[in-house]
Image 1 (cartoon, rainbow, N blue to C red):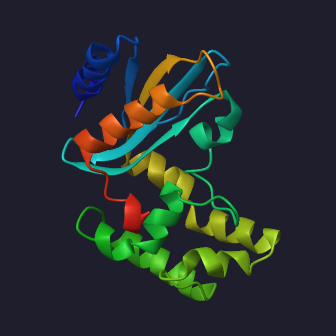
Image 2 (cartoon, helix red, strand yellow; image 1 turned 90 degrees about the vertical axis):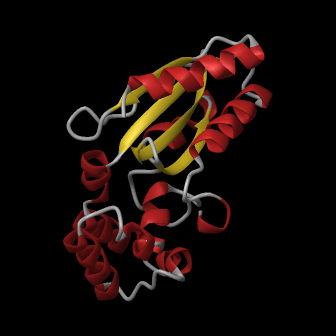
Image 3 (cartoon, rainbow, N blue to C red; image 1 turned 45 degrees about the vertical axis):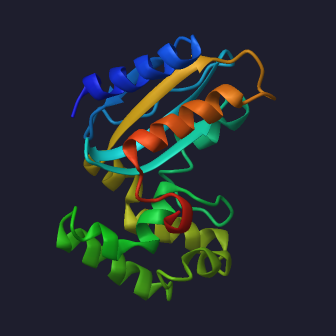
Length: 187
């Protein structure tokens, strides 16, 4: 898995639309840190294990900077459809991709906080801010995601934050090609 796949997808989008698209592959581990979107950029991101397993694809523009950099790495009560919530809601799916010890640790921590995988989003809403922070710290999901999952970023010029036809198409193309596990009913 490398920059090669990201470049192929970016080139396909550019060929289809005529819009220049810059692709970056961010390898799991210490280098896994999302970039920042400038006001002149919007983009699509993908979280992958490898070229055959994609977990989630999403989009953001300069008005949704937190969506780009932090929502998927941090647990909160209100943000829907994040990588962290998808992972914690579907630990059974992840068993075939990751260490059993990690999955069991996540299950144990959720059980301690009386959080069910099936009703994770509803159960989180019942916790106060301090408990959410404590749970998030105990899970250490940000570090776990950065150490176990690769990220791809696709950036295009932001001509208008109120018009997202270009990012909608780019997101749909990336979803079509990578077939993320956590989309639709599994989000």
